[in-house]
Image 1 (spheres, helix red, strand yellow):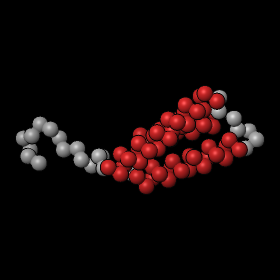
Image 2 (tube, rainbow, N blue to C red; image 1 turned 90 degrees about the vertical axis):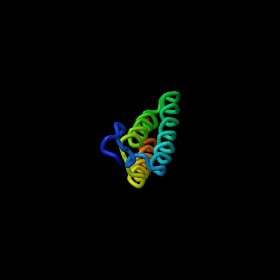
Image 3 (cartoon, rainbow, N blue to C red; image 1 turned 180 degrees about the horizontal axis):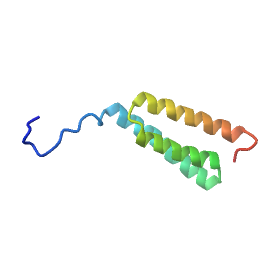
Amino acid sequence: MDESSPIPAVTSHFDTSVLFASLLWGSIGAGFCIYGKKQGSAPALIGGVALVAVSYFVGSTLWMSVCSLGILAGVFLWSRSNWGG
């Protein structure tokens, strides 16, 4: 890119797979938030917020998916335990 250009080159953070994974996990997280709030379920609400946060802060498709699947497993186990919502 030309040194005199006023527009910086920002191409490293706009990978289509990262954007798609972020859309997928963020949408699932938003659904969990809505469900958790309407049903009064703390595991679903907290898990939904965590899924949205992971989709926002993690920049790798693989690690975003691994973290999101871990959060989903945690929500499932927490909701099935005796001390879950």
